[in-house]
Image (cartoon, rainbow over all chains, first blue to last red; front, side, top):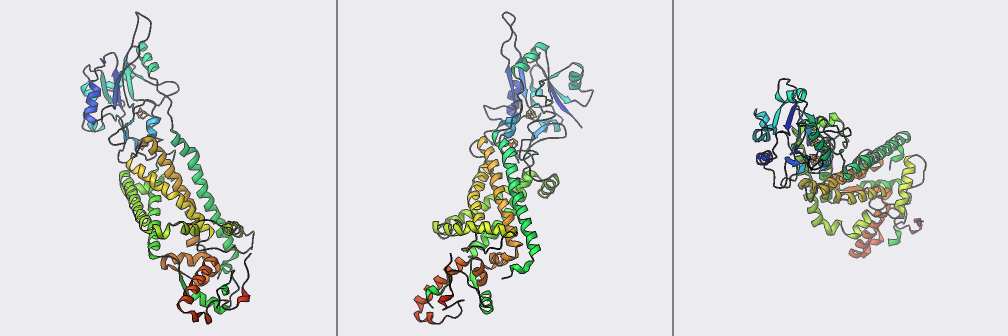
Length: 243
Length: 277
Ligand code: SF4
Ligand code: SF4
């Protein structure tokens, strides 16, 4: 099975936003939201040796996506190609997954009120095309392919050229978007936009820690109660209950 | 017969009296209520069954994998499953709205609610004695009950408190109203409120369908009536109220009739009554 991945060469990126525009057009993303975004790190270093780097971010289609488990309805899932997808038919727009994502890659689409995010343009992949952002990138800074195919360009960039994952020791969820660049630039990117530990919204925490045990206990207790009633009754015999 | 001839507490019945009362049916539920009850029961079964299958996250789910697989298989896609759950829920809310609007004066008036769900001192005592008797720890007679016993009242209270929560949170989720934050809490409250009702339903269904003592009450949910003996033994306060009303009615219609009404148990024997203390 395929393991799709994307590599962005930050040395080539000119921060032109062509990918953002192409993505928004492809997916009719409402203004003010984006499935992919281009940011620039703050300046680092001391004058005159200042440096900064563009960052192209999106859903990383993580190997161990922390956004899947908190999704109550099962709308968020990982498909056979390792792509993390949203079944919008089932999404109820609760936002649990939005808070769980360490990369802030998800948003609630104000038009559908359901969650929206990058899925590597899955329909395009199925048609044998590359994602819209890759096709549009003016600087040819983006590569897309199957990591399991050792002859693919992305495999070479990851396994031979050392493209890096933006993960830290504390948040290592296996992102499948890799970056090429000078080490100090990649360090700057990671320190400017580090993944934050996955969170569970208070509502979700109340559900798992309080309400679920409470409901199970209540139902369990009434069930046990009636079992006792049933056996006492068996023991006493039905005669007692005749009118 | 004088009105004080209706005993204040159950008196032992002769076999004949018991037999007559057993044969006589008294009306307990309107057809509308019976239909609503079974519509409600069917809806709850389907909604709880599909709802449990909709919570598929390992963190929150209550049903095992095989159950999810079966239900999802039946519906084809999870989208269909959710659409069914939502559509049926909305129909259910619609029916209750109609009931609420047209039945408001009949069923939801303060005095009716007081009679049907508020617990009085006897009711509280009843709950204790009932529990002790089930545990085999007491042979004490159950305190006298009105048209619904304390267990039924307690269940009604849970239902009356939780139904609005289930409905409102359901609508919020169905149309993703307000903000994701509100929707998130709606899911949680929906689950909790349904859980509370299901805990009550476990007893309600057992008492209705399995417990032999409550059989006439169960069948009254089909026929609308219970036999008078059951009312006399289990819902004495209600029985007494009806007898008093009937007597007043009869007397108004035909004052002479009160002279000979042999079928009332303990009829005419004013001295047979025991003040209930
Ligand atoms: S980047 Fe976020 S949304 Fe994408 S798979 Fe990882 S955790 Fe999920
Ligand atoms: S908002 Fe996210 S967590 Fe909630 S149902 Fe949609 S995909 Fe699942």
